[in-house]
Structure formats: structure tokens, C-alpha cells
Length: 83
Image (cartoon, rainbow, N blue to C red; front, side, top):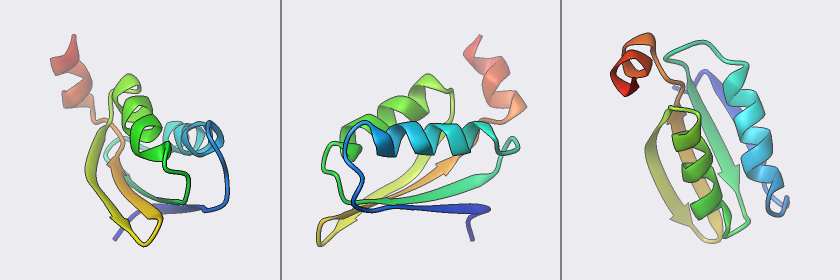
């Protein structure tokens, strides 16, 4: 069960990645964010943004023009291992 959910269907690049990144930054370490998008560029933009923030894409799936991402906000141990 995700800690937060964003329905970003209908938004075009770069808005899905920007809104997901903003929401992710407001969450606590280890929280799960689920994002649904319809913009095909999200398949590239969101994983890239997640990597830049030091967080992790747990799963990425696509069904009938909807891309779904489950993202785990970085934890303290992940941030320390990145240094």
C-alpha cells in the first residue's frame, strides 16, 4: 500500500516528473509514492528524476497508455551508501 498517490494523467512533459519530484521531496524517508501518468516521456523522465534524488523506482508498469510507478523515498542507509 503506497503512502501517497498522484494521478498525473493528462499532464505533458515535464510536469509529471516535476510534480512527482516535488511530492517525493515532501515525504518521509522510506515512504512509497505511487504515480500514474499518460505521457510516454514519463517512462524516461520519472526514473531519471528518482535517480537524481537518490530514491528508488520499485516498479514501473504500463497498461493501455497509463504508466504506473512505485517509488520509495531514499532512506538514511541508502543516502550513506551513495557517498
